[in-house]
Length: 484
Image (cartoon, rainbow, N blue to C red; front, side, top):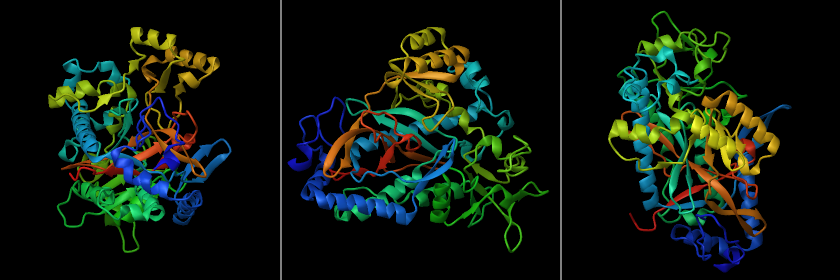
């Protein structure tokens, strides 16, 4: 097993497949042994097969640029990331705990706000939140759940321990790529799936369908579920179409739906209007209903909030769920877990400095060259400063932004993100930093994906894993080496 690993450089970071002695970790042993048995030519052939599969399956994503929108093939590395099943079991429990507490928190904010009255989170944090929706006050969705689909970003530190980097509760994306990564890998490395050690991911779309169906306001055998997309120019349109197709439900745009005089939502069909029970919406709050939010929006459905408020349709995720998607709120999540569940957090947060606090802000401004600064409500890796990789000019700009709008920024230490072997060129593996986005579903029951979407920084030394910023992806294997 030396051909590949003997040339693999030792790292100051926790490597998920190869330990500090150059020995494969238990969940990676079979994988690396198999890869080592392949010639350089055969390995290259497998890589080319992966690229051809991506083209054949039409797996793409859209990048927005000043020159226009660019469709790109999904960037994929054929060497999977492996995680021991017993380690994942702990992470899974932590993710369930976290989303349960966050949903209790959101429901409280739109009702009694006891979390504020009891001093757990300052009132101004919520008052100044861009994602708190006064229109949602007093509403209780089914099961008291607001965020039905959550994508929580995890990282591992130098000891291999999982930490939560952020929670995505508005319109989390990426799960289709997790499923497609597995489909590609089965074509490229089919021999390794002949035993049961690699746990499957294929049940996600069935679980998603069941979660959505359980939200139906009508007690009927086959509720009408639709996926609401902004349209073909959205960066995640591939995923919208993929999930609708996999669940066997209609993919619709706002113009395909209308709210009638009975405050129910209907879909236009060739056979006439058909009532819709559940909408899995992939449109941000402010665009879903021109009657309630932005009157200029052509993406949503006029009267949709009225229909939802009257209990005639369920929306997933519910409007207003994004109040817990705020990176400033993130800093309070451990206290939120203790407050609502009377439990210690199973998964820890990354240390976070709130620029809204004068003392913490002073520390951030003095250490911009060492910290990662993030805006409270951006996503996709946009609008952030990676201190160690930044210029003095960029640091000066962020110092000005932080001073002007301190509530809008947080800062975190530069993490020693774990690495994993990545095929850089013919027969050459090099470590690249990565993170992981598992997906958690919650309604009547709670479900966590087996692993999640692994995103990898393809540039040497880079910590930016977002595909829109040049990152790539790997299949994620939860490997049961202990027969659990």
